[in-house]
Image (cartoon, rainbow, N blue to C red; front, side, top):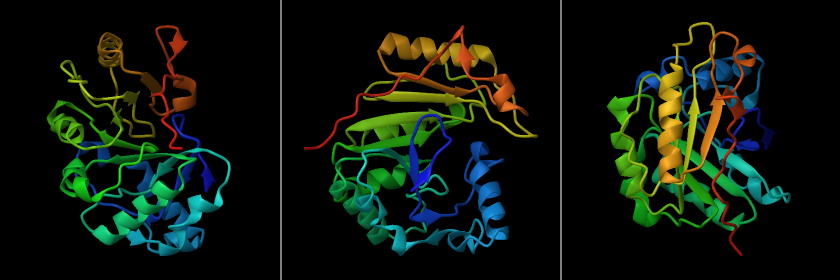
Length: 239
C-alpha cells in the first residue's frame, strides 16, 4: 500500500500497472511518466515500464492492511483494460469483497467492459466504480456506468478539456473535477468548473474540486468561488 498524494483518496493498490491511450485525456498521462521514472530507478513492479503488466503477488495485499482506508485501485493502470484477463479482474474483486473494512475506488475509461462483466462481478457496497470523462465527446461513458450494479458510481471529470453543460447525474453518487497539470497542460476554463458545480448542487450530488492544474498546480491551488470543495459520497461499510 502506498500513501497517496491524490486529494480524493488515501492509499493506492496496483495489482496491474501499465496501460494504452484511448482518448484525449490520456495524452499527457501522469502514470506513464511515473512508471518510466520507477523503471529507471529499478523498481521491480515497473520493470516493463508502462507496458501492461499483471502482479499476482499484489492481489491479497489489502487483506494485510488492517486499518480501514479509502484505496484507489490501479492508479497506474486501468483494471478493465482489454488485455487484463477476466479471471484476474474477478480475483481483484474477490479481494475487495473480503476486505470489507476498506473502501475501494476503481476508475476506468472502458466502462463498456465493466458492463459486459457486470453480472459476473460481486458488487459489495465497499466498491466504488467510476469513469473518466474529459469533454462532451465522451459523456456516453456515463450512460454505460449508470447501467452497472455498483452501489456507488462516480465521475472523474479530469483532465477537464471542455464544457459539460448537460450532465445527466441520475444514479451518479459523486463528481470529481480537475485541470491538467504539467509543462504542457491544456487549459481549463473557470466557467466549465462552475457550471459543473452548479449541476451537482442542483442534483444533490457531492462535488470534489481537485485542482486548477497548469504548469504549477500548487501555485494555482484548488479553491473555487473562495472555498475548497471536498465533498464525498457517504461510504457504505459492509458488516
